[in-house]
Amino acid sequence: MKINWKFPCILGLALVLLAGLSGCLPVQKAGLTDQKVASVTENLLKAINDNDYPAFSHDFGPEMKTALPQDKFPGLRAMLAKSSGNFISITGAPSLSNSQGYVIYRFQTKYEKENVIVTVTFAIGGQQVEGLFFNSPNLRKASQ
Image (cartoon, rainbow, N blue to C red; front, side):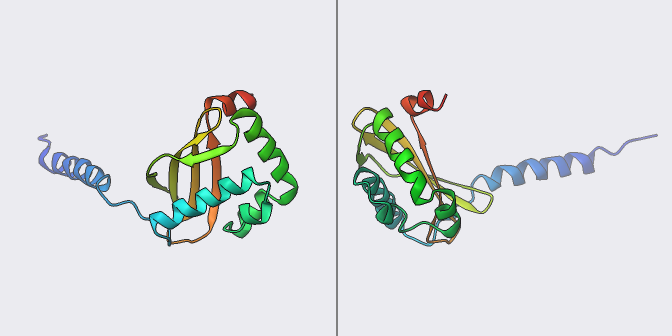
């Protein structure tokens, strides 16, 4: 019996090419400009410094307001202040990626005690914050 390897090889090559090209697709964005996303992020980080929950949660979607209600805000604020200090500035343009219908913006930020990566997520085409995450050496130690 003679096996025809031509079809499986062409199919395999096509799948590899398709997978490679999918990495070249442009990142989909939120329904806000990159500058507006940066402004929203900066405003909510300043609101943590100012102990201002209404300003902090102003651009949150309903699920975010449920996940981080006002009574949990002091704990977040205290943890950031103790581990990282107060927010000072965003230090550059965000990196962007997509995952499961969301746009993930990762900002390098400067706090008093250390640099912190702040990740803010929006639904693709959305205008409300759907996720907020902080990552730094001191914060990782504090959460252990």
